[in-house]
Image (cartoon, rainbow, N blue to C red; front, side, top):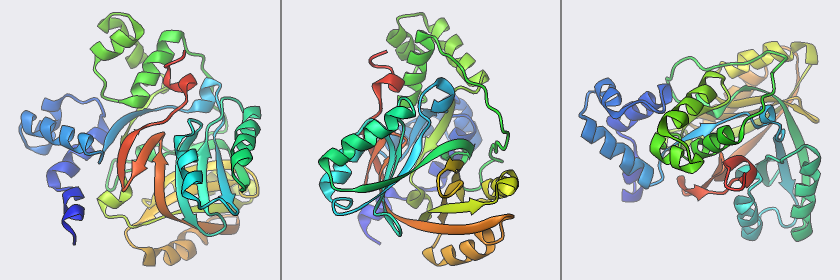
Length: 334
């Protein structure tokens, strides 16, 4: 094991902090210190070190479709330029791209694109194809069953949504600005958020608490699975009989290996991202988990070989290096 790798390994205190933040991303340091059995100063220094080194982030999360944006789409790219460093760099810096990875299988590259409106998705893809010779296949998200925000090994029971109806919301200008601040830093201070919206700290606190209570915003601990010992990362495109979709999705969303799962419009109606400790376990997962889903008609997998962007955070060698997100969501031009 190289020294560089050992510098990135999480010890028991790191994992305790991660678990505490997963439960409450804005928990005060004394509360986290009590939960992990350490001093407040030690816990705070350790978190700040992990954050500065780009190993973890606490970020805000929202369902963009409920806010009148999107909906998101997973896009497979293949073709002559799909593996070029220039192509990946272009997608990584593209503010519409929320997730980006190299993949092995029926696509060379996989991206999650969040357009401002569904019709504008074609405009985004057209602009990409003007500069690079690639083919694309899109899968528009129609319902999210569970998201990566709820995933950490041995964490509390995750939220699974198999309902068929969701309510849209319309945010005020100040609410959007607060949400944008949370998307960048879920632990941003009330004073910094108050300064961003040019209101009092009490107002900033009230708006933030309202966003959480109405489930418009939530917090997520961002950490690459490799840092937690998961070497096998893959996506599955699954075709389920529509009448079995809620049942199959509920079973798969509850599986500990599931990071993200959503229904989609396209040749497959269920798409998920999964992690396992070893690549040798992927075959058994395909047979014993995917193969046993009720109503399953077909499934294909894409192995994730390298991640370049996750939740708008730029990723380099499993560390987070800045943010490239849309101004209309992150708030700088609202």
